[in-house]
Length: 322
Image 1: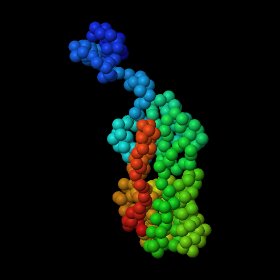
Image 2: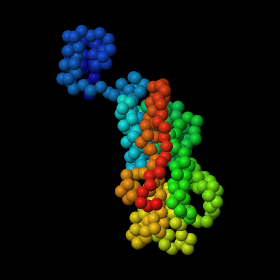
Image 3: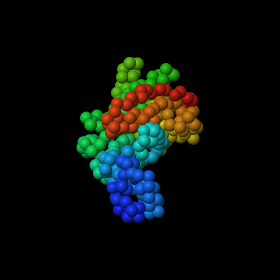
Image 4: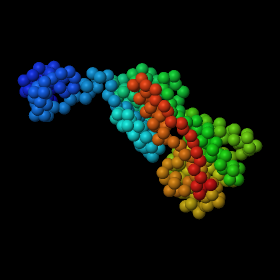
């Protein structure tokens, strides 16, 4: 690869003159500038961006770490990339498949200054390990975490879940079955708290029905619909962990000849694009705005500036399934 010394020899100037021309620093006569630029073009010179980044102490590149690339991750990624580009940063995507070793590669990229910061969608390693890398650059999480050095842009899903529960109650449903996600996550714990408070407020027995746990996929929802046909204590409504499990529940119910909401109502969570196509009632979750806030926190820490965060709020999107 061409280096500055070769350009200097071709142009008949010193390496320091070449450096001043290429970096736009200091005075250089027009004649020497013209010779340096001509030599650079003849030798097809391209600067080593890694070296430039090391010299400047910043890459203006942010790593975004995600387990997969489904629709909800796409929404976060899209919002984050748009905000980053508008701020003059680029984004490197690390897809880990929830593999802890691959996730460590992203953390090591931060330690070795290949990226200036990391945005974590959902992570597999222990929080203590993740937090130990925060000394190398800003780390922000979408996943709800409680950590001294890792801010999270989570929204309290207690509020969003309560919107769904109260909507179902207002429509006359009383035997509401909860389809929960991973019980190890704080968001699920918040939803369980919301259901407990909801039952207490309305005088309902929270243990009247059996609920579902560790649910996330379309296939999970399909299985729940089949189980409903065999259950002696049938719910009259389901509130799902996400739109995927809700969609599976609705689709399989229709294949079984059941009526939604005639036999039971279904409320999803996220408001993904396919929820509109299925006419699925759901809770809108402003993921793109969360992503924008995540970038604002990162940029603020990198550049040592104060950036405002967008206010975030859940809202119910009522459609045919309730």
